[in-house]
Amino acid sequence: MKLLAKDIKNNVLKSMESILDEEREALIAANKKDLDAFDSSDRAMYDRLVVNQAKVDGMIQAVKEVREQDDPVGKLKSSRELDNGLKILNRTAPFGTIMIIYESRPDVTIEAAVLAFKANNKILLKGGKEAWNSNKKLEEFWHKALKENGLEPEAWIQLLQMNRQETREFLKNPPEKLDLIVPRGGERLIQFVKDYAKCAVLVSGRGNNFLYVHKNADWDKAMQVIINAKTHKISACNALDKVLFDRNIPGYEAKVKELAAELKKNSVELLADEEIRNILPDAAPIEAESVWHEEFLALKALIGAVDNVEEAISRINTYSGGHSACIITEDNDTARAFMEQVDSAAVYQNASTRFTDGGQMGVGAELAISTDKLHHRGPLGLEQLVTNKYYVFGDGQVRV
Image (cartoon, rainbow, N blue to C red; front, side, top):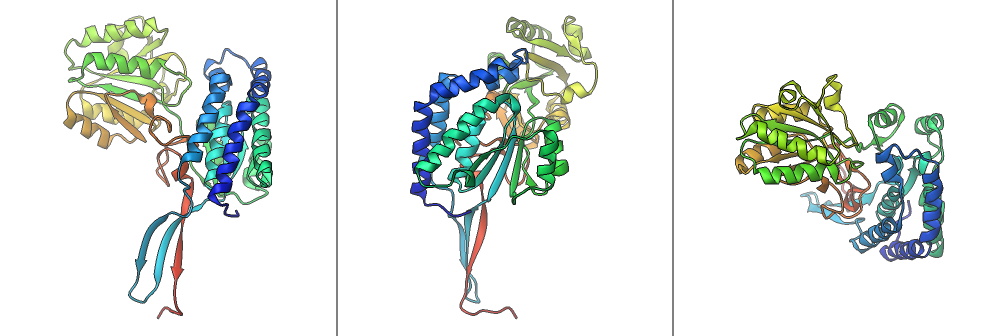
């Protein structure tokens, strides 16, 4: 891709902010077509699909925040001069062409595109059919912003409309060079992309987030964090799914009952392991081990019992999606051990998993939450959408 000057990129983003503001009613009208055609009984997906005035404000803010960040391209990572006189610089560089495959959320069409463009990448957007009208309108806005600044629209941002078979063929035989693919969705989507893609795949994995209530937990903090993490936004990948109770916590049975009562007040369906069901007989049983692996994306939570922090760590590392995990404890040494040994992108002490988000973590807009370890784990912001390149300067040196 041609390297664009920082001012040109920022001017495109300024134009996009204005267009989003001026055309917000047209976007909301396009979104209404998507909503009218969608089965609203799938609450998590429906919530992700909605575009309202607040969502448009959020889109404008996301573009503005990225515009105000430093340009990530061409930053010096290291510099050294060798004994033979070679001078070697390592600088950040664009990936090239990035493809993102995602469902439902039109705001991803904003965040993915603004991040990719500011990092000087082309972005191919493969949104779900349920958001086609919304995404098509947003693509029109992007193309208008690019044209206003003298750039060829489809050279930078392109919305793809393909069914599953067409997507498979695209991944197997892409019509242009793809440098990175980000599947943002469930296990089936991720596996589908891994099976057919010919380039690097960066996984934005499922949630299935765990919280462990340690024996030295502050109970008021535990209740507050659990209710927020579970009920604040059930459609988010950083929502809580599983709660592990330490059997040695003072007032164990009473605390289990208190938490269950509070969750039920919030309309949360409860599942429980055999021991917890002795305390909560109305909780549904765990019908299969696969339930421990499941990301609920619903008002649903599983409560289980463990004997100590080691058992909690083992349970989490066996079943979680590697997204976010939390320990509630006043014992900082135990918290440190938990946070070091749990294999998740974000680990918490005494705070809601809902903070695993680019904006909340100070990264700004995010392409996804990566659960991979290469090349980055956690929120994929502007700084993570570049790779690197070595610049080697010599004066006729040859290797002997």
